Length: 401
Image (cartoon, rainbow, N blue to C red; front, side, top):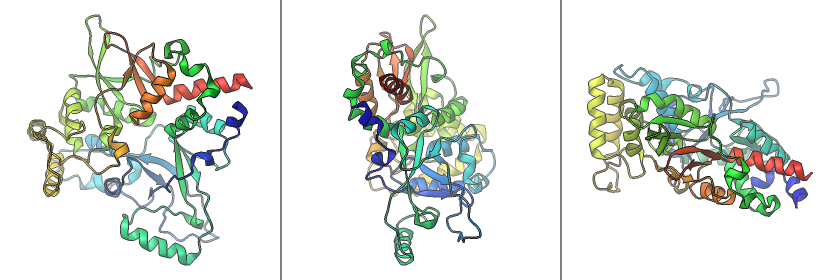
């Protein structure tokens, strides 16, 4: 069965996946990114090196590559670090979308549809979050392409497209996609799934763990949040225990921030890490915290963020759905039900004795790529990530062959 698993290609994981909506790093702005994210059911949008509106002839060929992906959490971190004492954030919104891309490394990698599953696992464990795969489709005539683009232009923002030159389209494969695929053949890895994560040595307790003190300012965690986006994990919110061990209280998840709108930058700029967890949690921010944010913005003279909050709260006053008692509905955006499942600040935890299978199912059920590991006192021990699990499975397959 191991040989059968090794024979699979990434195209086997692409069945039914929709084509990526894309932004051009050449022409798109931060404002375009915000509008696109708000109109999308998915938390991430891909960014490409080419101008999709430009006609490319045989004498002007160049590769159109995906250079990264962005989510609303990237926007929020960017706006938090912008000059917010100016009257307007228009210059920040007019900046190129490329300012939202990670500066350290690219988290997306192009592969052919014939790429072997083991090669895909190696790329993921090597640092890639998403693998860009061409979708195998029938050739599209020029007339059909014009008709489809006309329909798309009526239903999506004009700065995005799903079709590249030569009528090609792409989808992407995530860490979760690979883990789900391997679960269908989990017996191949026996007895690993039944063993504890401690015995398997997959608890990551050092470099991968990002944390912030519950009482510290949320703005001090912006760098950690950006790193968490790049590593596909979250930032642990902790307090010091009696014996100096860190007690896990919750988390600031990029996926939680991705379900907010850009006005959450005001909360990051003014609240503590603990209060930010409450602010961005699923039901919308409590009205009392919204007032606190507004008062602190005024105290700090952050005029740009004040104008941003006012503009968004005014435009959302006509929402049909009634907000939960004591909470406002003005600070969220439309996302898919799958993404909304992750919009909680409660940390998903296990213990050292949890089996690998239990941890995998726990992560997939909550649509996260990691599970925090705590001891019997709730103190943070470390985390288990999909990357750690894939490294374990990859080594097992090597030993079998």
